[in-house]
Image (cartoon, rainbow, N blue to C red; front, side, top):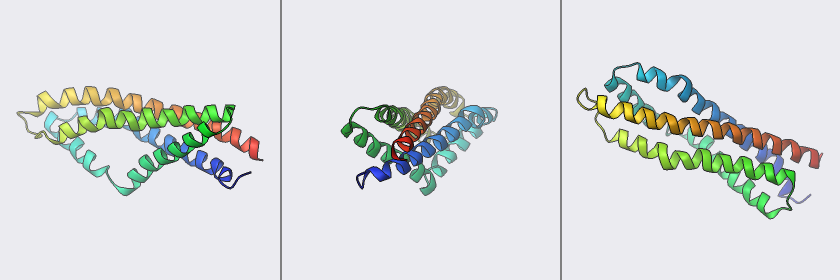
Length: 168
């Protein structure tokens, strides 16, 4: 086994764990956080979400979100360079779900929505127009991210079991 190949199993396990943690975080927002925020008066829900969007940009979240993306990028490169096998298929599928479905959707849809929300004043005069449309679009894309993060976790777990079988 090459020196690099010995790291594929731990990297795959870490990518699966990262995808699973992201799926759980995103599921929590889709399942109850956003529902709770929409039960508040519009200006309060909007102000709370603005604060959440600031607070989430922290080292722990960034290591989880971007670290998993880096692992998936490395695993994708590894899979592309390997002979086609069931392992490389699961790696490519799982990493694709995470990179496109979690990172790509976040950057293309949720971040621009968050930036637009950040530029709006959470006032009684503005919030009733801004907040409901933000929530509708943001939650729709968050459902997509949550689902694809979970799909990435499942695919990467299958890949890890295949890598384990091949190396042990």
